[in-house]
Image (cartoon, rainbow, N blue to C red; front, top):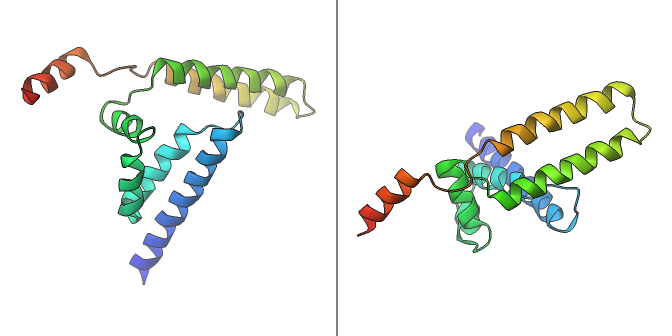
Length: 136
């Protein structure tokens, strides 16, 4: 019974994350990639068929695999995510939010932006060369 509940939890997390990621594809203020990554991760824990389906998607699969193997965030994604966080932080300053939220949220977004910026953008050269040598 406990194992069944665990599988249900991972499936629920995978579906909710996937739905949030799909919403993010059409709603500019909602991120897509983090939710898709969480969906694939949770699917791997409790719904391998969903994980395989996500990895087989031509637009999602390669990005998920590169993230899992090398922690890669493409430059375009970096610019887009940091730009959207910047816009959100500016809009927040003109909102009716309480003072500590106007300070804390932009600081959290700045921390995330720095972390994103420090992620590699492509497979490191020595690993790419090694993979090419192995493929030959």
